[in-house]
Image (cartoon, rainbow, N blue to C red; front, side, top):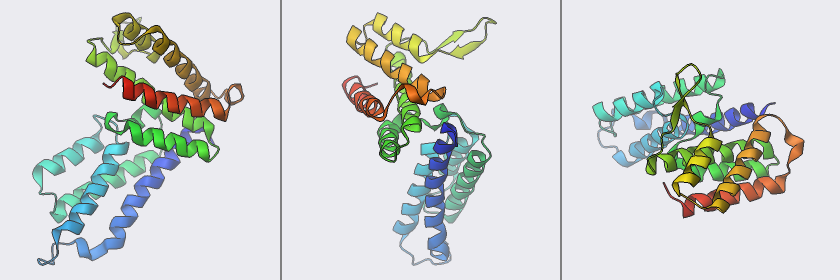
Length: 228
């Protein structure tokens, strides 16, 4: 099983949990019961929407559908919950079919801590390779946000003139040049990116669990000390 598949399995696991919780509640979530306290339904709405936000890529149809449901229906309304559940099921299907396999699509700026905790969990379960990929994805997204904060473009033209996202290593160099952080910080980021690349390219024997643990801890500290 490849690294991407392990990440997809983790996404499917969390999506299934949300869907199972809603399914278990069953008819108690319907509007057929006017005396029903709205709090339980609101809790399930929060669970479903949070799961969509955690795994739907920014700008994706899944995220747009969830945002549209929020705008058009009250959150306690059964139509809102129905729309959100349908979106979550569609998101699950896309993961299952392999349409969302890229690690960057799993990263969302508001969930850095959650993903680092996920990386720590995978490391504890002896899955150092997907742990390194996830932690590296968190770092790359934070570098992108630091660039935006410091007025640095995050895209650049390729050889054909088409705008493409900058590589993490280039953003690291430009952030150092801009004075966003010192030489030591630049060196640390460079070493973490190299470890992430080893994991992403299947060079699993060139690093060990301890190095991945140090990487995760270091990235967490880097983000805290240099918020974006």
